[in-house]
Amino acid sequence: MILIISASWDQHATKVKDIINKLGIECLVFNTDQYSKSNYLKFIRNKFSLVIDNRLIDIKSITSLWVRQPFLWYFIDKNRSEKEYLFFEYRKVEVFDLIKSFITYCENTSIFTINNIGRKLENKITNLLAAKDLGFTTPETVVGNNVDDFKLLAKKFKTLVIKPFTGVAFFGKKYIGNDLVEIKSSKILENINKLDAYYPLQIQEKIVKKFDIRITTVGKNIFPCAIHSQENPASKLDFRIVDPKKIRHESYQLPKKIEDLCFKLCKKFKLNYSTIDMAFNVNNRYVYFEINPDGEYLWLEELTDLKISQAIAQLLINPRVHKLV
Image (cartoon, rainbow, N blue to C red; front, side, top):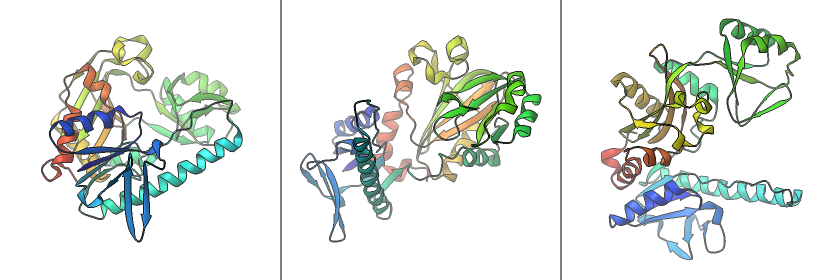
C-alpha cells in the first residue's frame, strides 16, 4: 500500500493516487484538513493507528509514503471571531505535530518516505548559500536593515527587486505582499533614509531574462520547462501572477552541468522531489533563484508533454530503482 498525506484541495495527490490505483496497487490519501472522528491518526500503547474514512489502516502494509502538502490553511473571514481563529490555530498546530511524529516514525522504519518537511529550505539565505557553494550563479542579494548596504547595491545596479524574506514583504510601511516588486535604484536612493529599519528587508539585483525555467526533480528524473515569461508584458518580472495559459511553455533540455548541479543540490537537502526556479538571462547564463521541496507542477503537465505525475507514481512504487537519496 502507498500512502499520501496531503489536503483535500490538492489535485497533485489525487492525480498520483489515480495513476497508482489504475496499476492495481492500492494508494490512499490522508487529508489533514478532514481530520475528524472518521479520519484521524492516533498514538496509543506505543503504536500509531491511522483511520481513513472509518477504515483502520494496517501501518505495516504501507511500503511508501509521500508527504505532499499536509497543511491546514486559515481562510480569512471577517465574520470569524478572534476565539474561532485561535481555535483554528490550536487545531492546526496539534494536528500537524502529531503528523510530523508519524512521518518521523515512518522514516525510521522500512517505509520509503518522500518527506519535504523540515528540510530547512524556507530560509532564503540557507537556500542561496547552498546553491552558490555548489557552483550555481545567483543574484547579488542584500538582506538586512542597514541603509548603507542598500545604497551600495542601488549604485551597482540600475534596477532592483524587493522579495519577501519569509512570507510577505514591506518597503518601509508600504505593504508589498508575497509578490516580487521591481524598483528603480534611483527611487531607493531617494527614499532609503525614510526606511523603517526594525526588520530585515531582502533586495536583489534584477535579472534581465530571456525566459524562466521551472525544473521539477523526481528521484533520478529531471523535468525542465521553459516558461517564456518575457513574451507577455504582465509576466516579465514574475510569471506566477499571470494565468499560465497566457504564457508559452515548452519542455527544455538543460546542459548536463546544470542538471548535475540540480541533483547535487537535491542530495545536499536529501530531496527525492523538488521544484527549482531558474532563469536564462540575456548574457546566456543560467541564474538560480530557489528550490522548493513541495512546489506545484500540474500546470506544467497540462501545458507540455512532461510526465511528472507518472514519475512520482513510479518512484513510490519502486523506490529502490528510482530514488536519488
